[in-house]
Image 1 (cartoon, helix red, strand yellow):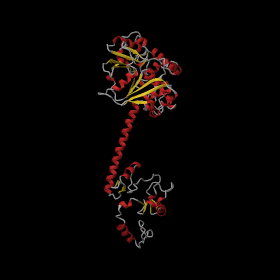
Image 2 (tube, rainbow, N blue to C red; image 1 turned 180 degrees about the vertical axis):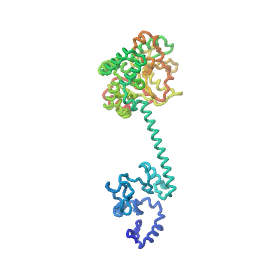
Image 3 (spheres, rainbow, N blue to C red; image 1 turned 135 degrees about the vertical axis):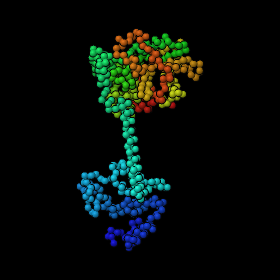
Image 4 (cartoon, rainbow, N blue to C red; image 1 turned 30 degrees about the vertical axis):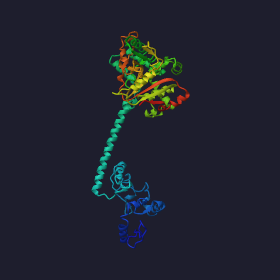
Length: 505
């Protein structure tokens, strides 16, 4: 008789005198145990020994006494494979000592897995849900079944790998689109500006004198942290007001924000700088607005910060605790990059310099054909359009322009045009929206004195700033508005944009 044979049943403890009797006892008395009775029992992971879940100490004692050798962790200086590689008490000679641990299924002992992920897929296939909702193990697979399972797992693994690759490519495309790709990290405002200015000289669209003059001016202003003024048009607001006075139809009224410079994109921010340019347009208004002039004098000495300076100020706002989620999304860095910014970054900057701001969210169209009547009504309320006299046709308010954000672009709303209505509920019907678009290429004027005369309205197509309300046809819009000087309590609230965001469903 084998000396390693135990004369007592490991399941119930009953003693037998021969191995054959023990085998028959297990097959007859324990092979058909009711699973419902086994729910509250624990089975030894190495043998058929079973104890009640209430006697966890017995199972621990059993494992440590009977299976102590199997629990032993092989040392580094032992066989390169696990302890399971021992054959007849000696290490197998066909296992390379430098090879990593052999990956094998703990249920069926199948080997040949390339990595842990494939082994995990395979192992999980052994576990099935029984009728009671508990997990059970199926280990009596034939070789054909094991081969079929392995092929199926290989297919699943390859499919998942291809999905991961596709997702990573899509993610990188999005990062590149919004200026977060590796190629954008190395090319900020300054490098892009000089590169495009070099191209203009090469195409003979700019003289060498203009090139060096513009480059010297840009470097000087960048060092000072203020905009170089190459794309600023301070006269557009006045020209537009005069144009509206001459062309306004009877029964139509127009409300304008107070004096605002038009600022378009330049050679250093083409393709990604619209958010910064809209912030600059708001600052140009606040610099001349009586309600904000003192604060802006203190902050910027009446100047308009350059885009690199705005990037520094946005990071400074983050460090003060403004918009933690936006900081995480942009990986805590915008300085020296071409990353796009949106409404929350504009809000964080404006709030951090002491302004009372709000974010208004219009997450979906509120009317037919992708229209946004709720957005238009909100703009009417913002410009206080109903508080007028009958004789007023062009009204210049004291309001700053609105920062308007939608997917992929942002613009500045500087006014709204409405028709009188006989409807008691809706006294005004919006028909036009007045917009300064920093991406409007027809106004990227390098030398405004040479190319467009300030006094000449005919040199500009001012109707380009007057858009039909149907142009507001995107799925979602966000507005950032400035409504005064913030108190200390309000400043703390504004550190979390969500806490002061209003949604119009």
